[in-house]
Image (cartoon, rainbow, N blue to C red; front, side, top):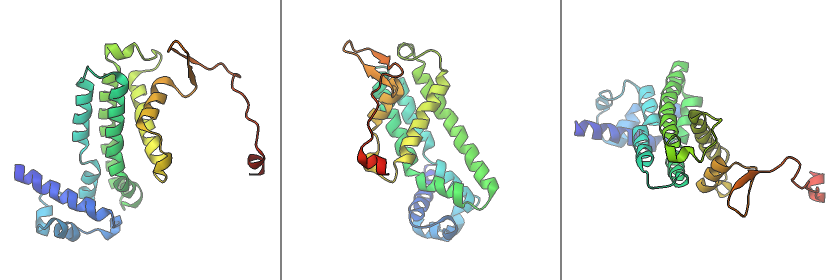
Length: 221
């Protein structure tokens, strides 16, 4: 059984390397077999065809990700902010590593049925992530820090949406990418809040922001 898992992991690793330089239609199972140094027939013991291999590759490692997040959730010593930063980094790393594969499945996969299967698999896995994060937010010591008018699963979805937005919108310019600490701070405290000297937070009142004067440069744009 261990050898079977090792062979499958070897095939997935070979396919992942090849996809760094090949598009979907350029990759063949012969390429994967050659890279993994196995016979082509071996591939069919683990995958039905190329489409099945690519779909499994895109979701490979998700169970490990959920296990890592479960460990974070079970850690009752760390404060909520630190736990969320750890989860943010884990989720961000997972999806960054599969950005190319997700693009391939969404844009290059030739069969609509394959894209539908891929989206269904991603939805199932996202639901599991949402449940884990909602469980963390719902712990008694954490509930006291959160507003009560938003469902916990909605908050978890917002959190994952912020991970995705950060990775997607700043992928072309990492130097401008907000840190996990900053994004978690915005998630917990909001973007339009000011910290008082007492350490509490309050929302800015409408109309209290100073209006910026347009510079000559901005007027010419």
